[in-house]
Length: 241
Image 1 (cartoon, rainbow, N blue to C red):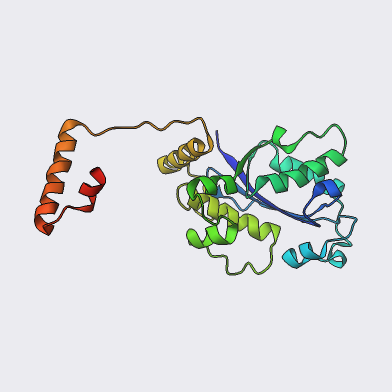
Image 2: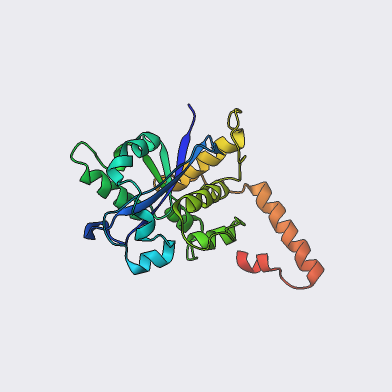
């Protein structure tokens, strides 16, 4: 069965859906078996409310631009059909899911939380496991993984979703083809997905393999040779002590 993943990002009128803030842009990038397909989803949405000044400075989207755009209720079915059953890749998932679930809730009891229909990978949580104590926002991660984001002057949902898709692939085992392919995923792809699943599973326990007596003896022999050549104990010898 093919793995369908969707890198997703939103732009909003503010920071808190509980205060009535709404989604104004949704961008999604589809991956099948870790390959970008080009079957993306992108829409601007009229929030029917004002946009906070701080939010507008981040994404540059104005109320005037959104005046003739559809309301969320008009695009919901298309969006839902697109993401249903997929694994969502989101950076700081709690933020975007909070807004999406708030939009679902406005449509009535027939809409459950998005987590009911999709599994979710939070790349911020993944990055914190891979790089504890470091900056793990998108710009910092792009620099760390050599992902070009020079064209990212303002935040944009589709642009950020595209960047996140490539970043996710780099974080979890290497880049893949940028265009649709019919080939099955390679063994490396499968191994990468296994490694990702292990990172995300807090109950996963790595197997510890200890050196045997012969390997320990070879190690000691090598340290002795280093000491003789440098006329002082090696750093590894000091650590052993």
